Image (cartoon, rainbow, N blue to C red; front, side, top):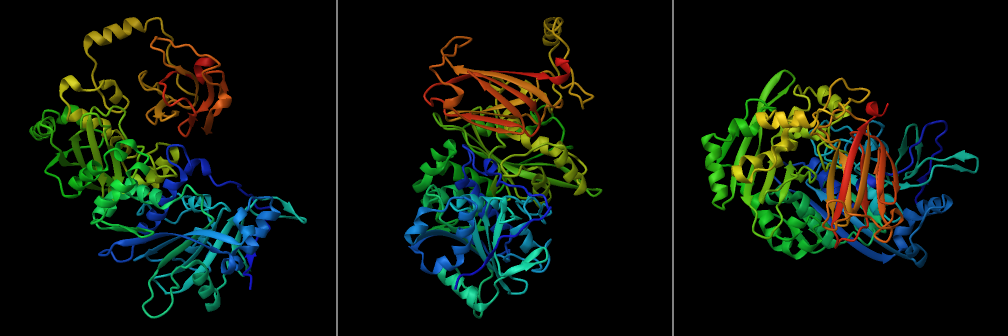
Length: 618
């Protein structure tokens, strides 16, 4: 028996084609990492017994198509109709698949008859989320990573729910919205029995569930005392998604959750838990993309363990926007911490500050572990929220200090969840974020976000000797640092003949001249430009040039060095014109980014960047 799929017609309903793949499959964070981040995040958010760890299992399978064909045949035929790719193995009667199963979780809850419930929200409502900031997600699109991981953009799932012990199964396959036989079809088809209003009637017989579990070797979720949870099936996963990469991503992004006993990850025959992580991590370290962690994973785990074991000191701020350095640098506790670090030892301490929500101020905090970076090594720099990393929250000047930040207190974790981007890699600043914070009752706006985002720089500054301190101008976009009188006079004289910086069309304030609209990240074979959240006069135009460094102050470019056609360019929320070695970017705003890779990794790049406000161009 071939089980039916439904490919609905959409009528006059608007459609949105695409999977936001550029957001979840980047050069610096490939889908093999975002896939693992999303899977583990979902399982941790669905934790059932708070006294037991969540276990998530990744298993690769390969077999003759046989039993699996009855669940995929209709989806394959729809993809062929839409002119989309089907893996060659299908025509050779072979199937490879990856299963992702969790236990000690609630399963996929929600009223099976309610389109806005969690169950149908998961399968149907991309870009909408029922999460309230209490979990690690909240944007409602991260699950597209499961579709991206499949070479036929398909995922199947079966769940047993903790609330009613009902077993429910569904599946979705990405297609192409277009006119077919006189009907305009949707972007997805679903493994279902029939259409039922705004949802689907599921295949709900015991026969279907038993055949599904047998065909894909997942938990049958039947019998007395059966576990609750969710099992996902990824047919024909990409070759890049393998056991070592999954283990590496779990260690890279969820080490605190594993080390404190909240999470167990099983991949093939390997079990990753708080007892085994120290033995498993070195075996897959070369697969970890973050070089500082890859080159010394034992040091990375030691820093996290130190933070989990508790803090020896506390630094308290009266308000989240107070100047951390000038207020606390000479405090006796800070001097003692700085001496420990200067003596070559690691130190863990708490940083606390008030957070106001719904009219009530609560003192919240995070744990910081700082240690000198060993000679010849790259500095480790990570922020974790409830055991999951936000790897783009990092310093611009490591100053030879390792730093791990752990945010585990619920109020602060909820606040930061609203500030995270769609892939949960960074803390963002936008009108949308401000509106979400206000709606959730947080009264401090973006000030706490700015404080947390600045901590990788600020805490290093706090614990570094005066002679080794980085340029204080990096803090002027957030902290008020007085200028020396002599410096002010020189700056005024130098700026007498310079044109006044004009604000953007929607801004009534002039940003400090030292705050650039662009932040530059160095990649292994290129660079990424992203918007500086501290800049206040978007949109602007950006002009940049790039050449291989040659030791001179102004290196020249040759067409034999590189050309735009040789490079890979990713553009988000702006317009790019790339000619020879010059980039001209229009409509640069808070959500913009440009990534260019493909340069010779053995040569150093020299980039020059200038921004021009639209008002000054008039």
